[in-house]
Image (tube, rainbow, N blue to C red; front, side, top):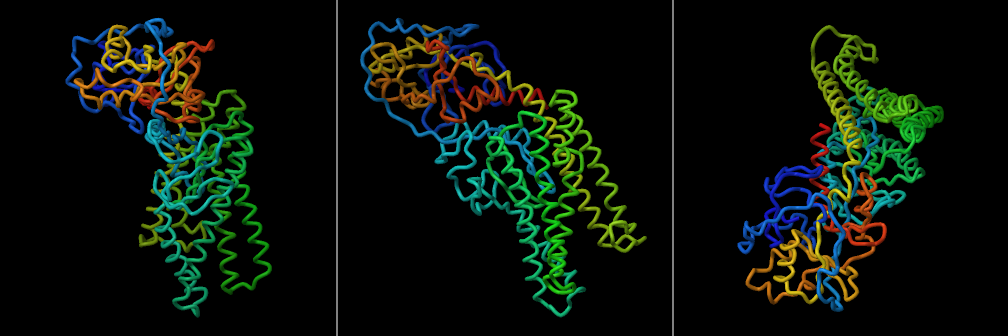
Length: 523
């Protein structure tokens, strides 16, 4: 959308008439123009960044309250249109659901959802789409991290923070090995590094359990990421039933318990007090801790999602389950903050009890504070995103669609803009001799044409060819609308009635602002 009127299409006065946000938008420009269409440059997610001196304030026209079908007879004579310039579109992702081990630090928040919606207006080289577990992406994850490979088509990333925790585990476990196996000397750190890698391999198995279950339920998985306090599987959709939600959450801790059992059996085959014996015992205990921690009944942990599923099943309302699990998660965060240092200091967790405050006590308190912050923040984010999902139905294609006027391909840009001004429209749809739409004129491309050249520039040179995926129903709303836009990423879409009649044009920038406004109200 041209936020400054730089395209030369008429700007409108008045306020916001749809569920959109005015953040970073001049107050004159409403986020919704019923029946209007954006005309944006290819690859430009924020068209119309400069004001065209050729656009006069007195050309502003009011907007209709209700978008109406485009009258193709408004053009006197339609001529066959030449092939318009094409534009490659990239992929945007929907807001993911994160299922993590042992922390849920990567649970998505509202800011991440904003970034996901913004991705709809950006052009990339990816092929990832709806229902696809992964696609061709850069070596770095969208949120940072190195791509280590793919399993079941899902990309596996390692966050930079993982290297920090790997070094920490190597140092701490190395100190323990020095007491158990002093003869190792400096080699104990190599053994400790192997333990750190093996432990996170176990975490990866935990996350793969979530991923396999999600794919089994036909829920697309965007990525798996290993990070400081564990891992996270980013699942793009919510489960449709509480039963599936329960299974999806439970399989992770279940696999961790299975791994603990496998390592326990392995302890019987190795000699205690040896390097293999210490490693196997450490991995057994670590997986038990991962399973137990994730089974705690509070969001954003797996146990919290299981509690959410149970309450959802009982009440029939997913939101009730989220509220209950989120508040239990916040109570859990306070318990961890206070209880973990006390348990360690009193020796309940196996350490020697002490009445003094030393470095170990400070370390335990710091660890407890970090874990508590992660749980508290994750619980709050889960609650906010649930409220946001309740508002997603407000994203209605019919409500966000802009008015458009049809023009033939050979129409000079200046004439096309005059017709748009006269009709109070802010979009141009190129039609063929039969009045059928064949392309959309890009708004930012218009802004790039100086006013004195517009009489000699045909609209066909500024248009993007329509593909079948760029035609969306006026009846779409909520997640169904977002899924449709994600399946065929573009900057604008032709909105049609069920009869195939043109209704107008939908801009992803308008969808983005409506999404942001919904987030503001759900915060």
